[in-house]
Image 1 (tube, rainbow, N blue to C red):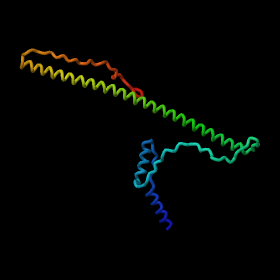
Image 2 (spheres, rainbow, N blue to C red):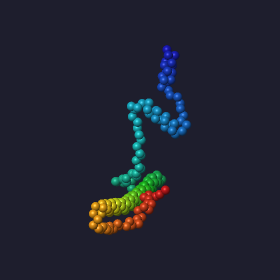
Image 3 (cartoon, helix red, strand yellow):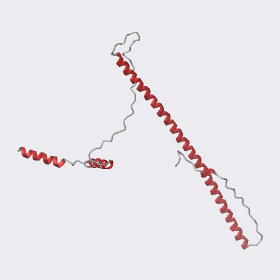
Length: 186
């Protein structure tokens, strides 16, 4: 009877036991983790959330242990004072870090706004240039059509040729083709 229980335990251990596999690199370790997760797909997987940022404890509304300046402090008060001082230093450090983060966020937002404005200015400049080019093409097309009509008209009637002068506006030298970078270049 004892032998059958041992055999039963051995069989259970042999069935459920997985061979020990030591990952050689990060990819293999990731593969092993995925395989372990996929053995039981119905099982819930907990994904750790980002830890909350530490914030100092708010000061108490009512202070009960007020030490007077005229009373002699005992040896036990040193540790209370040390703890209060440490907590105050931590609070000041937290506020300084918060101020630095706020300043960096403001500076980043200012830079983003400045880059957006610069991009809008370039877009407007290029839009105007495209519009001028489009108008120029339309004007050239009209001139060609008029010339074609004049040529067709002159072939049918030889009553004298009229010369049509159309002013084509000159394209201004534009610096919109100059390289521009928003956040830096290569």
